[in-house]
Amino acid sequence: MKNVIVIGGGITGAGIARDLTLRGMSVTLIEKHSPAASATGRCHGLLHSGARYAVKDAGSARECAEENLVLKDIASECIEDTGGLFLAITEDDAAYGDVLIPSCKISGIPVEEISPSDSPNSAAIRCIRTNDARIDPFLLTLANMYDAYKNGAEIIIGKSVINIDESSVILDDGSRITGEIVVNATGHECERLLRSSGRKTLPVQPNKGTLLVTERRVSDIILNRMRPPTNGDIIVPCHTTSLIGTTSSNSISTVPTRDEFKELIREASMLLPSVKYARVIRAFSGIRPLLGSGDGRSLSRDYQILEDGGSITVAGGKLTTYRLVAEKVSDLAMRLLGASGKCSTKTPLPDVFKKDPPTKIICNCESAVDRLIPMDFLNGVDISKYNRVGFGACQGMRCLHNSPAGISFLQERWKGVKPVISEGQFQQAYLSWASYMSRLGRI
Ligand SMILES: Cc1cc2nc3c(=O)[nH]c(=O)nc-3n(C[C@H](O)[C@H](O)[C@H](O)COP(=O)(O)OP(=O)(O)OC[C@H]3O[C@@H](n4cnc5c(N)ncnc54)[C@H](O)[C@@H]3O)c2cc1C
Image (cartoon, rainbow, N blue to C red; front, top):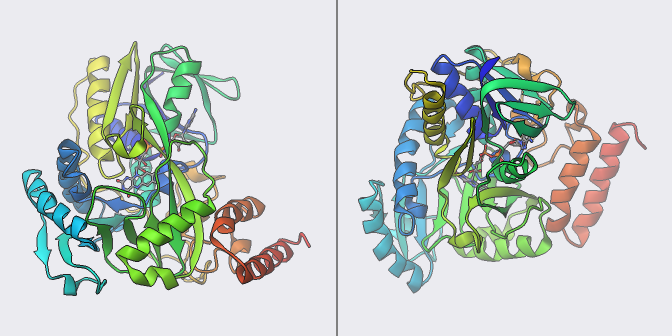
């Protein structure tokens, strides 16, 4: 019997598994799809400075400020330290700057006012620099899981927990795994799992956010609009592309819509006019596990931890603060187990890349090679997304034959391509589709 069973292989579950194994606990982690398959792999990957939350949510802002520095120390392989700018486009935005700067200072967030002429938008009237950065959520999750695995964790991928029953869980194949404590880190699905298990629940409000991917980078630095968080006010460089985000609606749909696409382009073009001319290659949507009820924009990005007779549930928070959340959950688990052992996750994460990767290119537009070191728990998992196969300009048209995902990759891509194309682009999209199918031997 293990000490702890962790359900969910997003960043929260992976971070908890790492923390507990480093404290000497025996852990089993269960993920129903693949590492970072849900909110974690569908976010901007913005390593927040905290400035976005400084005015309304000082507690979250301070945590982001602290964790931003910790992650830059321990996860440098996953981070591109781009820096960030907050740009005022209207007089109202500029007035918000008068509240933003002192709020950042109170929360210990380093900000500096610079000339708007040093920003990439000639229409900007005020500009504040922050230490935002880009963090790769897939690699960060894998690095945490891999460290847990190296320290003895058992990692089960591809099985779903259907019931939490005292200190054990029942899987969809009917088997039961027993542990002393169960940790439910299933993101927006945590409430459903608790309900179906007849347990006390947390007030989780699933909230959809849609992002757009541009064919090339439109900015090398992270851009934020200088105003309270609203739709279409962030642009994040992501490898060879940029991500434009995001929207907020109370929904569990992961299908992006044409209206979301139009709104994001309209708003982001104010932040950076060249967005109007950028080619958007895809949209995708993720579900935030927000806490409370009501309009998603008004809800805090804080997290909650619930303990209920040998099981712990955690929901909310951000990618940026995952390590801290994992520390708090692990502290509670250790107390319940009556065990001692301090958190040691402020130590560098292991490399997930091979020292001498093969030179054979498996995705031309990202110049991707198979860089991942072998991890046994990934056997049978399609690892192409961790190598960014199909994530660049051609969206897999030239490299799909290297991906075991085949048709399911095509269907997932098409869901995101449909809302962002119009008129002549349809012809091109159908040509791509025909090309995919012939390469796969289907036509
Ligand atoms: C659109 C969007 C943009 C965002 N942008 C940012 C950002 O830029 N910066 C930032 O810091 N944060 C951002 N966030 C927030 C961040 O993504 C989340 O807070 C974080 O990823 C939550 O991680 P998690 O592990 O708790 O949940 P998830 O990533 O949702 O992981 C839960 C996992 O549990 C698994 N699971 C569910 N049910 C079961 C079951 N029954 N059995 C087994 N496994 C199960 C799922 O498959 C999933 O992999 C964003 C979120 C969204 C939606």
